[in-house]
Length: 231
Image (cartoon, rainbow, N blue to C red; front, side, top):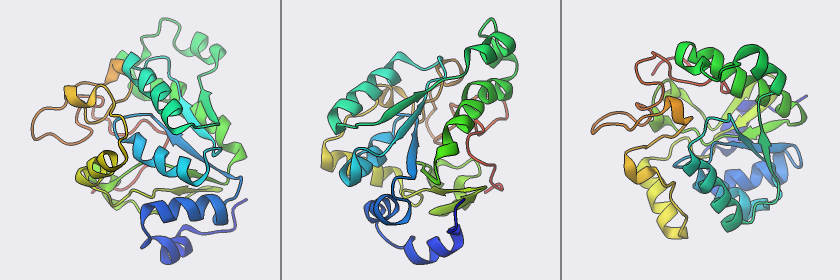
């Protein structure tokens, strides 16, 4: 059980640079008890790079929904090699759950909420039991309810740590340029945010960061992060 509160942690740490927050979380606040949930999406390289610099043995949880773009899997493997990440754990839905809940693999087309629950929420819920805290790469500029995010967030028995919460797209690009980090192959093809291939489309000019996710479904989150109040 976590004895630290998000409010106290925000008061003490939220004004620090993101890389210092990462180091403090790994080395001081949650030693051997923190991991990262990473989609290996268009902005993921930044936080992965910071974590690798602090301790490349930090567990990284990759949710393999079995519906990813091939480009995402290639980007994941490229970043693992480039950053020399030592503990990337692939988390998949249980075969029994897929057989019972999505035997033809088409649940996403009729009920995307149930599909996300089956392929993301349930598998991750089983995996995070061993952690006291989890890093996420969420940022306020993503919109969709994320405008209220803080650096540290109470999440039941765990703390979520969002070191990049105040970063802008320009901040992300500048960091990637400065450190020569590889881009997701779909980033230059109109995909600012990348999820499952079946539920992600390119975003048009002037659309929000996550506009291509579950387009036309009235859905803004997959369910692995607790709901936030609207912006």
